[in-house]
Image (tube, rainbow, N blue to C red; front, side, top):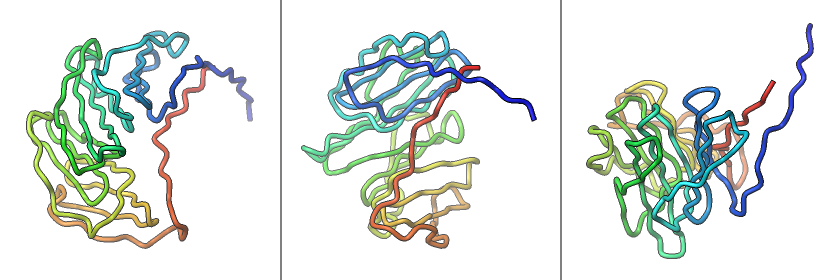
Length: 197
């Protein structure tokens, strides 16, 4: 078996970073605390600041294509959440959704139009690319940490209690899978590691 040599590409930033998303080998976004957004167009050699327009802690970013991206974040001090959308490759970000008394932690878009966001006792869904959002049936008071839809109808949620919850009909109904980790909290990482060969 051949061996590969890897080198680490990094840039030190002042805020905690929580999520990355790349649309190709060169272009990606990273988000984190205090509204931090950085963009690279050269495979992570350099990261350039973008204006999020918020000081919320940005938890999850999805870069759909060269123009469209979404970010969800929250401010636990005031129990409020925000979803941001860009249609300009990150040059500007606009509020797609903002709400009090909800804390969102993760977001997933299986198509250009259909998307979901989850958090503490809440799931919301859009069917028009984030123009409007509506609540989906509550997941039995789960502290939902991560959501992923590999297809339009099939999706998974990881909860803070170590449970996996699944839907097969686009979020209309959800059911529990076997609990795979027994611990107080299960942390699903939103980091994506980019290795440069």
